[in-house]
Image (tube, rainbow, N blue to C red; front, side, top):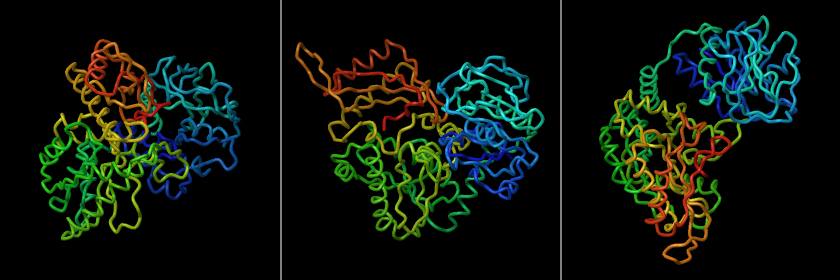
Length: 510
């Protein structure tokens, strides 16, 4: 077991993910977890995560000092490295040059943490502060042009710090660095796998639900399908599905959802036409946070009525959702130190309801959900469908949501996806979609002046949704997509292609 002390990092669970990928259990605890709590897990190593705060602040987050007296290895990442350096008397300063994104480190010293790496390695940074002076007994083991102590280690103790993030996909050998810590330094043994996780989730859901009934919110996406399949295997006929047509879905979505769900054996599915209700509540709303919360509360209102009337003969005590970890971490869910990026519609539930929330996938990332789906023998065509946000097209219409704007983005998106599939590109892309921007520009069609809307196209590479790079698409394909959208979608006269990474941008626009 490796224990991760979370200082509010967007990537804390990504560290756990990497360790689980290596076949080793990992547990995330609050940075102030007591030594007794930590000891209870019998860890062979501790990782200090990054975080949004600064060690230069008064009352900055710090762990219990006794973690360095447990006699086990400690590995600080970004903020965690700065905390370690300051704890032992080092000096941390705000840098004149901030490092965000891809950099190259020069490995300056042989160290078990970097076993098997070359002298120059591409890594991913995200920091403004840096360790200016190392504490006594520590030495630098890697540097960059702007950061002399990009990585450091104690000369005698198994204590390490890196200023970059080995857990993100853009640190090319990051998995090797984590593996070196887990196996070479900590001596951990493999004890975790996807079949084990599947059985554990099913068993825990069965125990938690007992003889109660569960209503699950279905969207037709991968997450809700995998969650529904797990629950169906755990509790069978005690599970009831609700699919809400909120008017914010992709083209031809309603029919496709029913087929995908019933194919997995869940036959008690109720479809609710709530399009008018959602659009009325969204009228005049431009702020994305307000849109998300309105959608969340409207969903819950619909479910409340369904449970009160359609399911009144069943002892329903649980509402299940396909929430996955990026949904929660970007909402700073359950954290007192993480920065909130955006609210997630699944997380705005009123406390007055008498039923509990089940989130079977809450600690998993998208690629893990898909691997779990493969373990459940779900069809590949369904599992590898691109992610679609819970608030639907409402957050792909930047600004106010209207039927006219929804029609434009829905049609543009359908053309985009159709052309990607036709060109054989869809399966190479992690997520692709169209966005309607709240702008109009001048154009010319048939020798006449137009003043119409802009569609932005987004396509990204990603592993888990926490970081992403833009997809280098063939220019002739982009041209074909653009021509079709402008020609076929009334009200659009300009198409743009987004080439921004995450971070600094998010994948979705709102």
